[in-house]
Length: 281
Ligand code: ATR
Image (tube, rainbow, N blue to C red; front, side, top):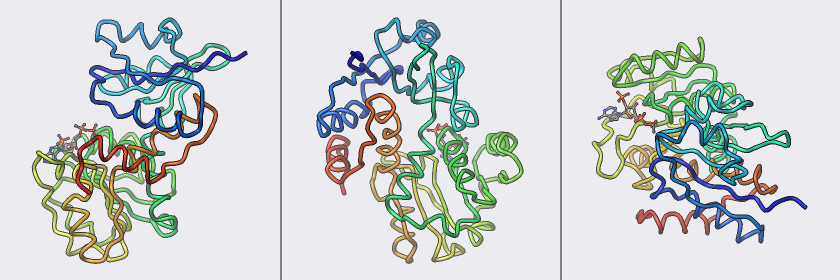
């Protein structure tokens, strides 16, 4: 008989992770035998922990900060997203005992858009991405995977945007932050991946006047659920998608891999996580 899967969110720290709540919701909803726990990994143990995951009694795990890059380096097999993004957030041991890794942030971004605006990528030739951190890398990978032809990346520190552009190739172009207005007019999709606009952070002050009304606007920030960017975009007639769905959808491939069933991101799950986050709707 197959052993009952024991999975964990791993990182340092892991106290605030919502992953156990999300995975636990699905385990209960589908009546699946298995567990999903929090497992803090101390920095001095991290390298051996991921290289010898089986020793910890886990059959797979999620990885959060600061170990996503280390986790990718520890894997024998990586999916395309993890290879290109250079970081893995979902790990499992295959039938040979080899460590496999995936990066599901980009898939989560796409799953969220597909659920909220099913035809968003019918005409999505030009993407504008704000920010150049790990979230931006996942979004750039996701947009290119849906054949967006040009992705313009804007970042306060332009060298970080340039690094992504160099890695992802000629469809991605880096720009300094002050040039956003010049490129908004061409955008079919605008994505904020910076922390600007998040509760307690500086506001994201960009003028949307050049943006086409048919452009989709989305934010990976989910607290507040409707950021000022999304509010301004909605009020001028653009379709908008909030960031909570990305958080939930990125958990789908892991659950499917570990527990053998593709779970649904439903309204009750959104409500559960919003309540736990204390986010006003
Ligand atoms: P993550 O990996 O989660 O995407 P990150 O690496 O901390 O997070 O990236 C945060 C992004 O928000 C970066 O693009 C950062 O810009 P820098 O690369 O210049 O640091 C951006 N950001 C954060 N605070 C900002 C601010 N006050 N003004 C402009 N950009 C900001």
